[in-house]
Image 1: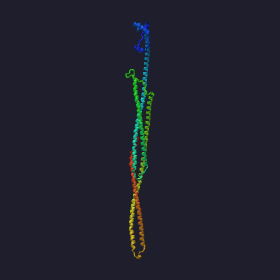
Image 2 (image 1 turned 90 degrees about the vertical axis):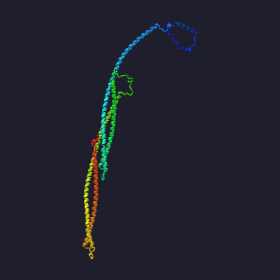
Image 3 (image 1 turned 30 degrees about the vertical axis):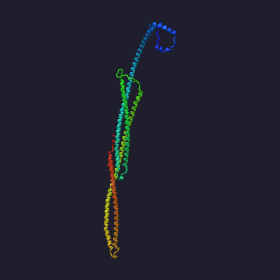
Amino acid sequence: MSKLLVSRPHFDTRAVTQHEQLRPPVDPETTLKHNFLTSSGLAAAGYRSAKYTPAEWMAKNNATLNQALSDLTNSEKIRFDSKVLYTETEVKTLRTQADGTTHLGERLQDIHFWKSELERHIEHLGAETDLLLAEKCRLEKGLDATEIPFAIATDNLTCRERRLGPDLVKDLVEEELIQEVELIRSIQALHKRTLDQTVAQIKSNRDAKQTLEMDWSDKHQAYSLDNQCGRYSNTSSETQHQAGSAKIQDHVSNSEEWMYFTQANLAAAEHEMRASAVLRKLIERVLQDTSEDLRAQCSRVDLAFNQRCQELTEAKIQLELHLSQILQQIGTQERNIVSLQQALHDKEAPMRVAQSRLYQRTHRPNMELCRDSPQLSLVDEVETITHTMSALTQQLCVSRDSLAALEETRMALEKAIACKTHSLLIDREKCMGHRTRYPDLVTLSGY
């Protein structure tokens, strides 16, 4: 009877239809037996289908009770484990949050320290750059101040080219002036090189300062963010979920790299400050040495001018003294020539008298025409006067030649005196007067 209460198997009519052709041929007797059994069970089919036995009911009830007891026990265990996990996670969460807050505080201290170091170096670098800018201004003023000595020296050389005659000589003054021009050119070249180096150093200082300022700005922003993070609490209304924020990005640096970056920036800034300080000392030494060299050369040129003017003055005095003597001698010679001419003129009358006497006595007749004492005396007188006049004429020629030589000497002396006067005018009045505008030591030092 228990077998009859089992559910009947279910057949799919479609499957039967599909497989009818595949079934083997059925025996007629078997078919009759099957139909008989089927027809006899159809009468009780409505009371036996879909019902359980008492054993199945008891098993089902016991299984339900066992499942309820198991779920109850499991629930108690889960509730206990949940309470333990809640307590542990709460303590752990508070501890990690406290650790995070502590680390944020330590980080804020580190950022504040390095930010203070950056501020100090930025201030020092700015002050050093200002000092270097002041030295650059001095260097530019010193370079501009050399233009006046250069113009003075070149003008002196140009003026002295207008000296006349033998005074156009390459003397000590010209050598010192040429040396002064070469010195000024070398100083200007040195100033320009130093100025270029100063401009480059100022740019390096500003670049280093800009790097420190950018680093300081980043740290200032990071300090504000970390300070804000440190003020967050579980009751803060500004907090919200940020998915993926715990993922570490590839470009994020570590603490060692962060510290090394700032230390490298500070080291670079200190290097530039040391280089700037050394350059400032170099500029000071360059300005001091060049200004002293220029003033020393100026003193040598002035001394050479004084010596040359003294030589010219002495030469002019000697020429003027000789000129006065020559003029006096010219006057004396002119009077001597006049005296000689007068003497020659005075000899003409005695010569006429003697020659007339001799001529008249040639008319004496016969034996009266004899060489008597008067005749011999007259002949001797004529010869004497002739020799005298010849001597006077020769002496007159010599005196005239001497006068011509004296006149030439006078002209040469006057020309030499004029030349010396012109040279003194150039050296003393123009050149030395122009050199009074020579810059002093303070101006050449760039102040």
